[in-house]
Length: 290
Image (cartoon, rainbow, N blue to C red; front, side, top):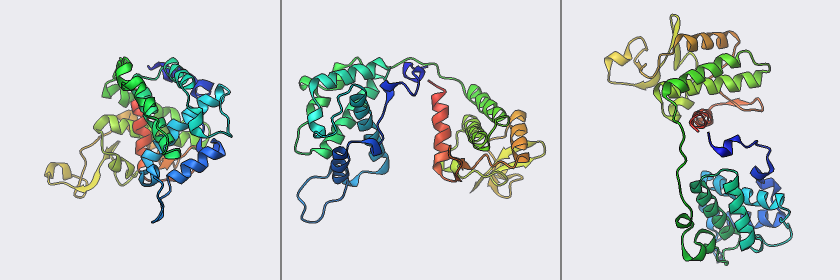
C-alpha cells in the first residue's frame, strides 16, 4: 500500500485544479498554445498536435501545480503563469510531492509535464532548470528508489472481483450497484484470462458471456482455427473463462435484477459502451497491487 493512497482524497495537499478552475490568463494562453496555427502565424504552438491522452496528462500535472499554489496562498490570478515559477516555490512544491508519498519517478514526470505546460503558455521563456536543476537532470538528483509492494496473485484478484460482484447486489441505489458489479466482473475476467481492452470493452451478457447449464463461459466473436476451442460456441472461441460457481451465482442474480454488468456505467448513471469500462476495471485491478 503506497503512502499516497492512504491520504484522504479531500486532503488539501492532493488538490488538483480542474481546467475550468484555472485563472483566466492560464486558460487563455494554454488554449492558444494548443490551437493549430494559421498559415502565416509565426508563434510556436507546442500543444497543437497533441493526442488526447497527452493533453489530459499535461492538464492534470499543471492543475496539481496550481492546486499547490492555491493551497499555499501563492496563486495570483493576475500575473503571467511563467512569473509564478520561482525557485522557492518550486522547492516547496517538490517537498510537498515527497511529503504526500509520490515516488521519485512520478515526481520527475510531474516536473516534466509542468515544464511542458509552461512552454505551451510561454514558448519564449526557458524552463529547462525545472527538469535540469544546476545543470544536472532531476532524475540524477533524486534517489529514484522503487517502492516495494506486494503483488497479489491472480487468485486473490479473482476472489476480490467476485466479492465486489456479490457485495454490489446488496447495495442500495441502482447506479452504485451497477458500477461496483461491473468493476467486479471485469476484474474477475482480467484475473482469469487477461483479455485485451478492446475485447473486454465488447463483452455483452448473452453474446460473449454465455450461460452453459449452471455456469457461464466467456466466448470471443473472433473465429479461431482450433476445433477444440470452437465447441458449443457456433464457431467462436470460448477459451478465456469459465466462471467459478460464485461468479455464476452473481451473474445469475444480476440477470434476475435486469442489470447489464458488461455495459459501461458512469457514476452519474449514464451507460454506454467502449474501452472506458475495461480501462476502469484494469485501473482498479492495478490499484489492488499497491
